[in-house]
Amino acid sequence: MNEKNTRWQTLALLGALCAAATAAAVWYDLTYNGGKLVYPMHSYAFAPTDIPMLLAVALDVVYALYLAFLLVCGIRAQRERVLRTNRTRRLSPKFGVLGFLGFLGFVGFWSYGTWGDATPFVFFGFFGFFGFFFEGKMSNTLMDERYKENAVRAGLKAYRTGFSIIVVLLIVAGQSSRSRAELIAPVLIAGIALTVALTMFLSEYLLYRYDHDDAAALEEP
Amino acid sequence: MEGFTCNLKTYRLLKGLTQGELAELVGVRRETIMRLEKAQYNPSLKLAIDISRAVGAGIEEIFVFE
Image (tube, rainbow over all chains, first blue to last red):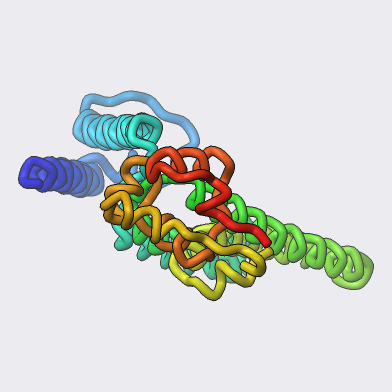
């Protein structure tokens, strides 16, 4: 546990160092380099005074790549452990707070109104991370035949719900194609992102319920 | 489950096994054994055979379908 804490502290320290180096480089660039690398530019010619900023950016890229590498290694190790032990992956229910990232989707209303860019609506999909709360509650559970049966049942119900909503969305979008054609893209992007989130959440929530709730388990055929 | 009776508890106790021990023997969770004993879960043929071997009784004696 201490080793794990030390690793997290080291990562946080490295991140803070990168942020501090970037902030210092931006300050240097704005003060001594005319903000050459801070403001948007059309063409670039190297000058030795750019070196601090370039080093800071390189440091950030290396740090981001290192984080991505750690993530891939972690996922691979978890997958191997799941196969070896036949237990669900270890995950803290606290990861459920990542679901709040879904609120970033509301940025879409502003960006669509300002630039006509509907892409941020995709972030509504992050609401699905609320499912980590229930996945975390079933962390490290032995995947026996009842668990697998419940997982299939929960997944099927979640996907069926998701597909039904998407069909309704398509019908609604089809009806409004003549009168308000410009609204189809944002409505579909936001609607599908929310449906994906709901499906992700439902599959974890229903699995938890089927596994813990006698009444719900008995209701199903 | 209608028409399904499970006599697992009787045979398990005769064998002197706890729910946890039986669960470990047949590779399932204790909760699954609990549900089986309450006749709330219909086991697969493989699990039924494993349980019958573990408690030393026939499948049709443990799991009764009317």
